[in-house]
Image (cartoon, rainbow, N blue to C red):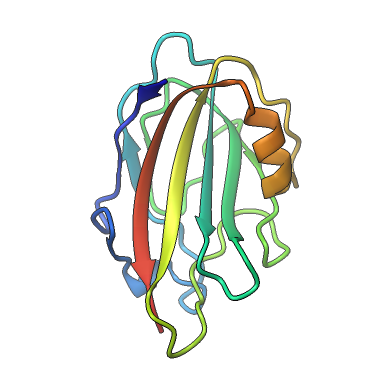
Length: 150
């Protein structure tokens, strides 16, 4: 599997995410940039999940159907042609961090997947749907971890 570099101009890897991108501040997705996808990638998918949530891993953002020529997203951007998954707040699109007050900082894993075959996912898909759809199709990936506490 090939590695793709995934970064944000809003925060560094394993660094604190600005509150602008939190659930309390309006759920503005952070800007992301990544290295060009390998030639055999036909679709990109993106997930942001918090494995430190009290009830288990919490999905904050799920996107699929991203054009493989895309190399980033502006803050708040939904890429043309992409399909939105349903986050664990119950809405489609980005739902920012909202860890319990007083918890140690939670980790937010932004994972980019380069797929060799289309995912076939419709709007409203879940994190479980994404995992099943990308299984055996991922040929490149990148990860960025942000942290957040309240």
